[in-house]
Length: 308
Image (cartoon, rainbow, N blue to C red; front, side):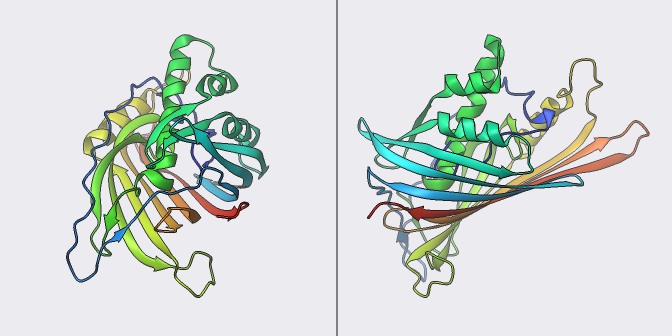
């Protein structure tokens, strides 16, 4: 979980059955970009105040095959000192819409707190045991796998908001690549090492319609590589209920894109857009291969409630 708080509940059974995989290795991090080229690098620094509070609204849309859903989430993001770091919490969460799992998402969001370093490094998530109880995991294997899945979601959420950017120096037109351990987009129970590319799109107004470009727009694009896709296909093929025949999955393509508008000297967020897409080729009993397509889109707005 992170300041962004993307919806967590997933109605598709294939998203959760593979939760038992162990976590991946820590991501490899390139050093910040060096000066050079026609434009000077823009340095991105994490400097959230320890008493930050902001009102966050999320417009969530999803398309699962021929079905579409929409929901609106709102909460207060509360930051407080935690040892030598910061605790990022959600309070007063609410949701409305026609997508599954609204109440579950609200409960999970208010249960999980992120603990991060003063330099923007993700450290851990508190409240995992209570969250596992809310999910209804009853045996130790299920609890352990659910705990790992929630931790992956938490780390990825923070990566999109701060982790990918803190301490970097980026030059427009010169993307930086690295790998990040997360899950297959729209399959949170299927771990995968994602190939990531981050870039500085350029200056941007902090608020839509604002004249001055005081913020910067940052882009984050990721997809699982060939080995991660092959491993994911194996997991999804066994992702059916007891007694049901396995899915005959013959291809998987997945991608995730985020666009963050933030203040470069603090990484205080103003707007965030996250899009995910999953395409599965499934062979039907008659022999034809049908492509199953799921997509989601989340649009965030941040309004601060304290003087910065």
